[in-house]
Length: 269
Image 1: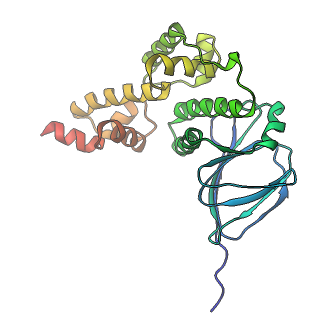
Image 2: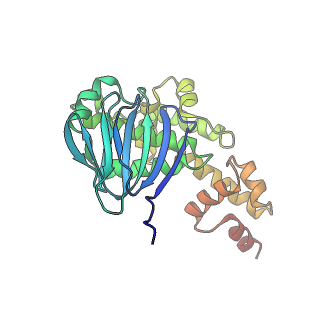
C-alpha cells in the first residue's frame, strides 16, 4: 500500500483593508518551514494542532489559546508539533499597525496568552472572508492593533481610553446619513478630524456597540420593513447597503434569528 501523502491546504488573498498585507490560511501535516523572514508583521493563530518554531535562537510553541506575533526582518522557522500537523490562520500586517520600535519586545515575547485578543483575531478573519464587512474588519483591526501595542510596551497615561461623547455623536450622525452607502474608517476619520482608533474607541465607549455593529443594525431594521412590504431578499440587500443577498442573510439571521425569506413569509402569513 502506498504511503499517504502529506496534506497541504492553502488559501491566500489580499483584502481591501488598510494595514493588512495578506490573509493566509493553511493546513499542513508534515511540511516544515525553513528559516526565513518577512517584511511584514506575522500575526498567527492555530485552530488545530500546534506549531513549534525558533526565533532569535530560542524555541517557542503555539498552543490553541495563544496569539503569536512574529516581528518583521527577524528569521524564524516552523514545523508541526503534533502527529496530525496543524491548521493555522495568519494575518500579515504592515508598519501602520505596529511600528518597528516594537520589534525587540516582540522577539522577547512572541507568544501572547490573551483570550480576548485570540477571540478578536478569529472574528477579524471571519469578517475578512466576507465581502461587505470591511467596516467591521477595520474596527476589529483597530482593537487588535491597540491590544498588541499594549502587550509590547509599558502602559502609559496616553494609552488610557478617553470618552468623547461629541465625537461619538458625530460618527453616529455620519452612519445614519450613510446607512446604504456606508463608509470606511479612514473616510469617517477624515470627515470628523479624528484618529481612526480614537474614533472607534469613543463610539464604543459612548454607545456600548462598535460602529460596524451599529451600521448593520440600522441596515437590518430597514431590511425588515422592506421585506414586510413584499420586496424580495435580493432587492432588499441592494436597497439596504448589503454587498449581496448572502451578506444580508448572514447579518439578518444573526440579529433576527431567521433568514430574510422566512421572516418575509411569516409576515405575509
